[in-house]
Image 1 (cartoon, rainbow, N blue to C red):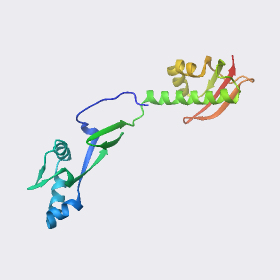
Image 2: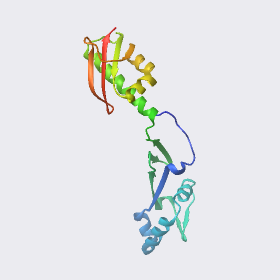
Image 3: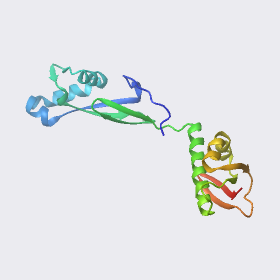
Image 4: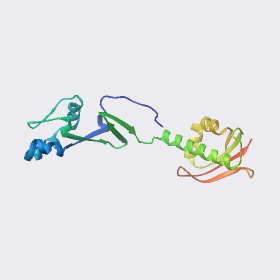
Length: 187
């Protein structure tokens, strides 16, 4: 679930490039000097080499002229990101989980479990319900932040922090790493 998309011409420090010689191409082209080309590539600024390749310009390194087909480029995302590149375009995904994202994830898990409880209780899809929940602060914060979402998705008329009533269908167990109890009963 992507929250925002940012289009940039330079990924900055979120992405690093690794350069390697394309040996099947460079071997016949440079023969015994391939090791010098390899050293020149290792010493080169990967960002500058990639920029030249993308612009369609040959790359000049240590007196050698290299075409884009002479160099293999690997995309390496920095910590907290994952990346993929194709045809000169890179897509980066920020994989860091903020407190807000963690609360949203827990709210989605609450919805999933409540929907499972609705099915287990044999409720119709249009039946309104009353919900109870018990858990730690993380669960309470998720419910407080996403109450309207949870109620809308599950058709809950009320959500009360309390132990489940005897007539309710309940779940007791792990909810996104939190020990929790959820229950539903028909309104």
